[in-house]
Length: 166
Length: 438
Image (cartoon, rainbow over all chains, first blue to last red; front, side):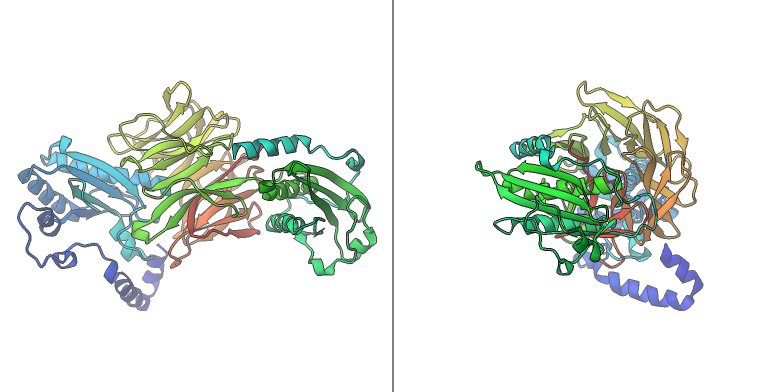
């Protein structure tokens, strides 16, 4: 947050901070692409790799919000379609928060994000009894730096197949 | 450990002072007003307790360190001492202590009883009035020598400030190790000064937010050990664990009621919101205290058990609310701008400590129980989770400086001027201060 205030005042700072952020987080990024996962692009349709790489296993939230963003709606629609096609999977929705909140509130916030994600998938036909939720609050960040480039990656809900997610 | 506790309880009962050392109810020249914001630390001379081994000076060091860390006392360097105390039963040469501006003087002796127990005698002197303020002796198992030192420091603190001390207390906290995205979090307990650390869980699952029962024998905490995050009870000495209630969803943010009969906590609803419940530990009955479509969490009882302060985002962002212990009259009390969470009622009943997020910073502060008189004690990049010393004068919390990689524990007094780092081997968070042992 302090970062944002500084940025809007000083465009030079923006470039600098962005560069630092990219450098700082490059090797700590979420595995969102096949290359990150070392899969070389090929993954069997219906596999967990297929889900993670080609559908996208996670969505992101705004600060202190559990509203499903427009960019997340598309991902969840694809998730629902895939999950309806491959009905052998049980699903755990993990809700997470960034570290810019206090521990207990963030446990509740992560739970609310997981519930919102679950409800969205159920509304698109995924059977509710295949879906469980769990909140990790701010306990399991995927990106570890001290600015918004990481915090925005940590405010997430991850759709984990058979509970084998991150 | 239980046996040791009993021994020291016995010792406390015997600590009525020797007849020859009866405390004079004299008007003391030396006293401290802990309410004053800018109090100068009181120069005090803590002499090495006489002993046949190094134990006397060890105990003296612990007493000095306690007094110094309180911010209210300035122990004088031993090199400046003129008189060498050779007979702690005799009056000191007050002139020698006045010359080096020692307002108070501590003398003592440690000996071993025939049964192996430790016997510690101490006297506190008002050097300018030329009189003894306190004379006490304690018997304890040798393994409890640190506790004896803390009890003596509490006695000195209490006599000179008029407030209960807080040195003979412990802190439960979370020991953090490993990389941030796979952090191992273990329950741990230590003395308030960071000594005598003991681990209460093995770190194979996440453990969070431990809190003491009023008896100090039990803690309630939240853990992922069953896979699902749940509230547990743990008997500190026996290691016995117990799930609190059998609820379908996550339970979290537990705290004991002041009488130790109930645990108050948050329960996740199926719709993703969280409400506050109290569970009676004997009858196992649960009472719903809030029922709003919001996050209601971090409940904390007032010391008389009649009210509960908690965090709710029912107004759009996290704020602090107070209600009756039956859930009645839910009223917002935080209006300072920014968001507020982690409210904790002071053991004295007069203040509520909180974490505030404002302007991109995290602040630890206190307000009166109606929300007025807000004071910020410390601001920083990331800090949260205040817990009160049992005398309601000092707050411990955890802070993570930007780029530091993890949190550490700190204490700060109500003036906001005396901040102290609590030494821990690893990163540490979620401290909870024990009550004083009665």
